[in-house]
Length: 138
Image (cartoon, rainbow, N blue to C red; front, side, top):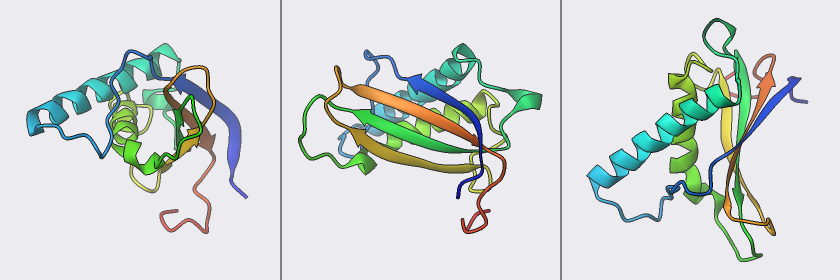
């Protein structure tokens, strides 16, 4: 059983944002630029959604990323890990977490949500009191 506190944040990524996947064939410069854009966005969204920061930072949390799709085609959610990682790094830069190591962050776990109204990405953060004992990093 997960030790959730009951506090959570659902952060939709604006639809005009270009997401990153492992299938992208970007130059190194383009990948770095897009990663920085997503990190900055993650920090800005943390502030916008009034997530606890600095002295009130989350001790640990479960992070989920939902890929919102409008059809029932087959999707590999792991392909969106570059997007999820950059957004979580932005949460660290905004001081929502002291760090995103395994003792503080469970995930990001990626899921596909088919049959949504529009395509997109949703970051869901669920605060935990502590890492579960059966979790290797806890």
